[in-house]
Image (cartoon, rainbow, N blue to C red; front, top):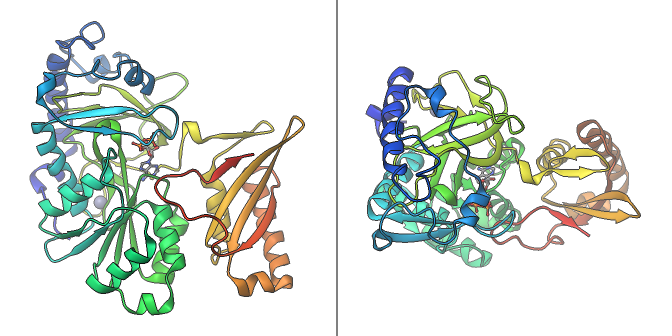
Length: 419
Ligand code: ADP
Ligand code: ZN
């Protein structure tokens, strides 16, 4: 698979660091003149360790500065407004100037090129074209690469399936949960009449189990993309080796910190991802705490790209459930379900309070044949309970339901209900 910007994507690590250092200094010089940053930032650093002394920026800082407190260019230079889905509170807003938007297109072309997307391909975009940035990223990136985009937006599943059958796109772009749902409701006849080979997903945790299942059961290669409204672009994307997501280090400087101490962790260790814009006019973010947990993969990727890889995000700090003193991430439960029950199509975690004790029930959708086979189901249930206990140290109640019982997912939703 060819590399779109070899002069950038295959630079030596030393050259990448040198470029980043220069750009950081340019960014500090620019940002330290703005009202928001003038008392927070030095205008120059002498080393990366100087950079590590700069205070972090949090989602709450962005909320406090709403609407225009973080703006670093005249308001009339803004050409696009974006806002996050507000999964963990009030949505955060983000702005782009015309130059930022040109960089956005370039960044998105880089990420989408990692999947091999080119002018020979057609992509069905199943995410919204609204305040979210993901749909626009797919739009600008695909068009920039000369691919054909079918911008149908989310939901309306029967229409999505008709378009897949009529126009025969070979790529799709959606949240992983919507892709999962779509593949579940498609019939054999639908599968016989489509040419979907690559599904790009982002916005939510994508598990390796689902990625493997999609390949094995549907012959669809799923690529993981990671992005965030605050940066108004995708940040990392998998290449065809599917071993971590390459961060666009031409545009972003990435650090991993210990969320408790705020100190940068040794290379390869897990911690919270902290990102800094190396370029951006309207709203540069400097040392922004993403709340997402990951680690860098220090070895070079077999694809030849030298930009650092981060492991897929398996959880964000805010997702953590504390059940009777045990810390649990929903992604651990998902991993466990699909490992034990590869015919499961969907699930929902229900947490309820019984006096002061929290109880967990997991509703799991399974095919009718299995639901009717009481003996086999009993064995599977016992195995899954055993495995969940080993994974998350608690024993949830399981409820098996028929496919289609758990409501259709549109957009980003949590797989957890607190009752
Ligand atoms: P929010 O969900 O906070 O309202 P966004 O809609 O901008 O904000 O979503 C960004 C967040 O979504 C990221 O910080 C991360 O937690 C999550 N996310 C995005 N892409 C992925 C991915 N590929 N894997 C896991 N989590 C992701
Ligand atoms: Zn690679």
